Image (cartoon, rainbow, N blue to C red; front, side, top):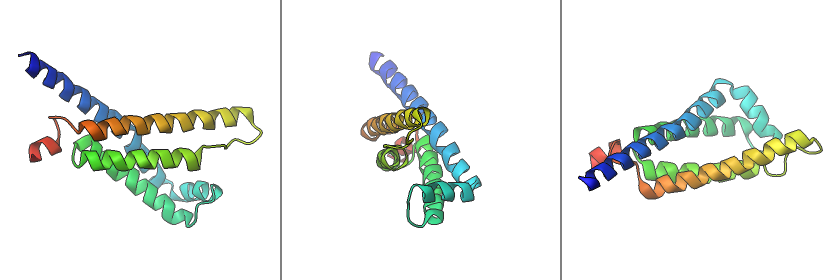
Length: 140
């Protein structure tokens, strides 16, 4: 009985965590894809090569990986890929940016730390898996 309650609580928490991760990456991917010109412009300002290609790739990756996480399908590889993406995004998109503007520099520092923390949470999801309420669990 205690073990069953523990599994129920664990499954509920893992589902909630997956929904929260999806609430970050699915809208981010959708926003990137819905304004591809602005996204490409931002990536170009960051110095990324082929910014239009990068914008399409980032938008599709965030959207699809977010959907996989919410569904709990291929959760471990999706979470691992998103954790690598989040660390990369932290360094490319926020590290040392903001210039002389103290407010902008502070905002980039906060976004950097949040991206790193998100990567940490995704590594927990990589280790734990999707839980019992997922496509992964049904396929096993």
